[in-house]
Amino acid sequence: MRAVAAWLKAAHIETGAIFRAVDQLGHVAPDALSDRSVARIVQRAAEAAGLDPKTVAGHSLRSGFATTAAKKGKSLDAIMRQTLHKSEQVARGYIRHGKLFDDNAAVGLA
Image (cartoon, rainbow, N blue to C red; front, top):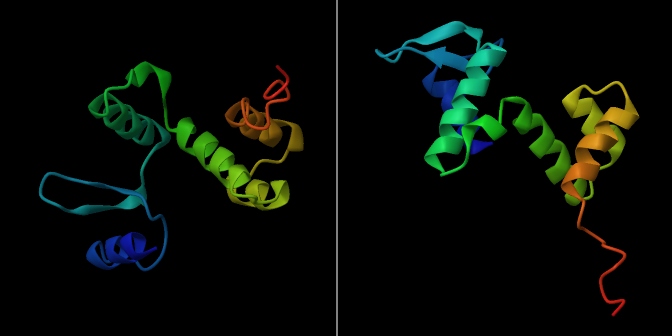
């Protein structure tokens, strides 16, 4: 939250979108980043971290949030309010993928 508060102050954002483009001169755009812009940012960060940028996109942020929230014990309802999922089935799909090997029924059977 401190980082977000610092960004809002530095960018002089009082209303509207939090995530906005910044040009080469440091001017902050008045509108939100596009979905494609977010995807490019995520892919550049993945590549810088040594990951294949073709395996991630802006959508990965939503999936990662849902998975992390579930692992931290947040309710499906709370997660859906944040991610704006309308379908429990779709929201559970995000979480299930991230918990594939958690609470593995095969562990300790041998």
